[in-house]
Figure 1 (cartoon, rainbow, N blue to C red):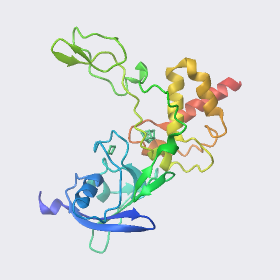
Figure 2 (cartoon, rainbow, N blue to C red):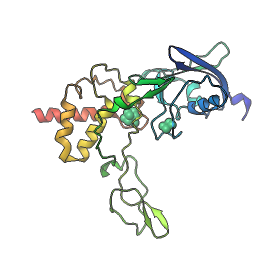
Figure 3 (tube, rainbow, N blue to C red):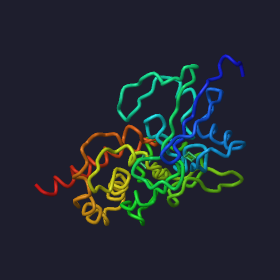
Figure 4 (spheres, protein in one colour):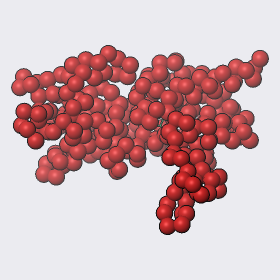
Length: 266
Ligand code: SF4
Ligand code: FES
């Protein structure tokens, strides 16, 4: 790597009431999670953090990165050295730099979650409102947003809600279902400015998806949405939809629930 393209950073990682700071130079494509892993290999001062998959699918590595709830495994040094919002929906602004020109990056735990240590949080209680027996297979009409490849000639179509099946000597896609997009990362919950008792955007998105997919459970899902901590406290700030890394658009689901509840009252 050409030295001129290296990016100098100062990572300031929350540790209780203070920050632990680390200065380093990195290639632009390195993610925040890559950098923490590299630092941790030989510096025991690195505060605790959570991660698993390293590719945006497990939802465990959320943190507030320089003001914006984000996944550490999808946020690169290049992202952080370019203009970027400091809050959901805010204008993109130049990064803060120290006197030596290094980009100052703050890492803090997601809001509304109990901190275990460093920036590692315990997210479980935040998702208490998600129906535990909800189906995690999306309805077929969702396939247009993220289509599977077309079935090859002769593949068995419609043999259950699975994404692949064995056909001869090769694995081929069958059917059109896909799994729900939400990875339960909690970024939407951390970004939401509503502080009243509120089951939150991720739970309400799950409630609406369950209502859409399983008509026999619609009444139960609408009862959750109509409760005092359901859709009513939402102030339509849309911070949830802006930070969601999976394009779930929780704000859209909350509005759909509102519409259905209003129709039922007419
Ligand atoms: S709705 Fe989006 S931001 Fe919220 S938990 Fe699911 S994936 Fe994360
Ligand atoms: S480590 Fe799995 S989403 Fe980031």
